[in-house]
Length: 161
Image (cartoon, rainbow, N blue to C red; front, side, top):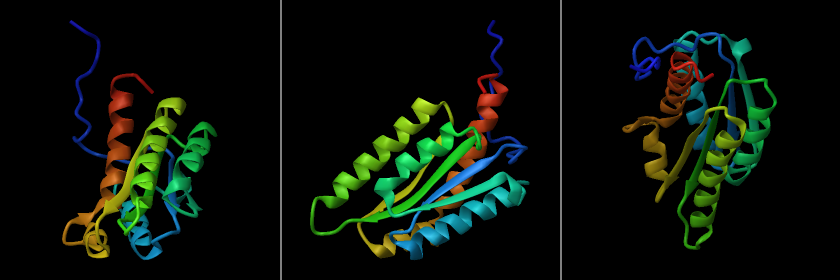
């Protein structure tokens, strides 16, 4: 029998005493600001105090990985929530930004050992983005904040923090 504690992270979700870094893109600010509001609201509703929250703004989704990595490596936070929005246009730019942002954020988490949560909307239209930033499809910023709390709880329960 293993000493690992089986924990799915969803029971009694709490912000705890952990510190959260939120890195938000300024590009598509009307959407990203709503994601950021949703993330901050979710963290506060689950017990986070403002002193546990650090918010950094970067130009766009392509810049999220570097800022997230530096914040994760700084020791100032226990989890990073990266928030952005990329809307498909008429050129391949969308594909490059989405793929490299996702790859870079995954690498930031793996290199730092700190959970880096992908809260970047990649949509075909502005309407789809708005629906996911507090509209009919909920708020994916709040979902990303809950994922951060869950990852910290899972890692802590398994003594992997």
